[in-house]
Amino acid sequence: MVDGVVGPSGVAVGDDSLRGASLSLLADAVSSVGTAAQAQTLFELLEPWADTAIMVGSLNGCIGPADRYLGALAARAGQTQIAEACFRRGLVFARRSGSPLWITQLTLAYGSFLHAAGEARSPEAGEMLSQARQLAHTHDFGRARAQLHALGWT
Image 1 (spheres, rainbow, N blue to C red):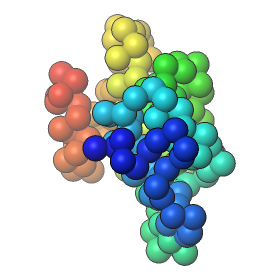
Image 2: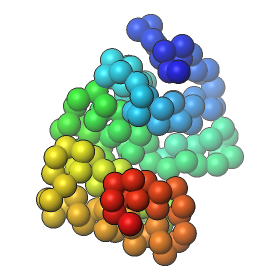
Image 3: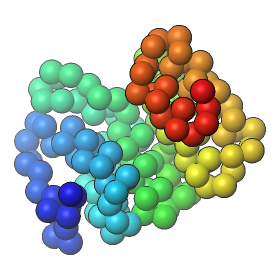
Image 4: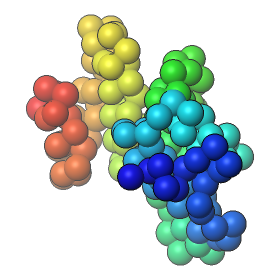
C-alpha cells in the first residue's frame, strides 16, 4: 500500500499547502504497515513541523500536533528515544492547547508506545492509558475507545 507512495527517493506528495497534512496522514499508514526505512524517510520530511500543529491547507483545518506522527514514525523506525521525546513534546503541546481530542490522541499514542515497548506495567504507561480512557469516554471519542479496547484498556 505505502510502497508506491514512500520510496528511497522520497514521497509522492505535493509541495503545496497540503504537504504537512498529507505527510501526517501518510505517517499514520507508514507507522502501522510501513518499513523502518519508509518511517525514517517520512520522519525526516515531517520533522520541520516538530512542535507545531499540522494545518490543512491555508488554515482550513488542523489535525493536531506533528509530534504525535513523528513519535509513531520514530517508533516504527526503531528510534525509541527519539519516539519518546516526540511523544512527550507533543503531549506538552496538546496540554497547552487545551484540546481534549489532542490530549486523548497523545496520551493514547504515548501509552501505546510504552505498552508495546514492554513497559505495560510501568506507572507512566498505565497513567497515559487511563487518562486516554477517561477522556475518550467523557468526550465520546469512538476511535480512541476502539483503540483502547484493542489494548485491553476498556
